[in-house]
Image (cartoon, rainbow, N blue to C red):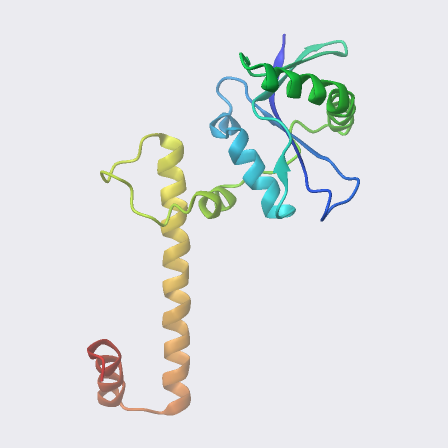
Length: 186
């Protein structure tokens, strides 16, 4: 049985000298992480290490078991892209295999933990959906998480207002006038 992983190598030698971040995310069928593409994984890394850039796009690692690993690259028809892929293969492939083996030895299947809350922030699901209906069950879960976050924030604001009201000992009429003035522009 083989396991397939998306691989993102990223670095910024100016900010993180001598460091290359290698992230793995399962890409098998019926996995919740399968909704994440390479760009999403890079964005998740940027939440931890800002301003890193991807070394190569579209890397896929296949683990056939018994230590047999294979790294696959996007098909490239341009000579410069193929040359860059050869450079990446020479420079990063041993590092990718080493980090993958370390991750598996630690009993992990991915390098970044993905939560609904992180995805909500990453994709800003507070924005309205195009036609009002989500495109997948995963998107629906993300939208629901965004709504929960918005409701929690609304409740916090109400609590703050109630505490401020108690502290000031204002009458209901005074508070209503104050709220009205906020919305009317007075």
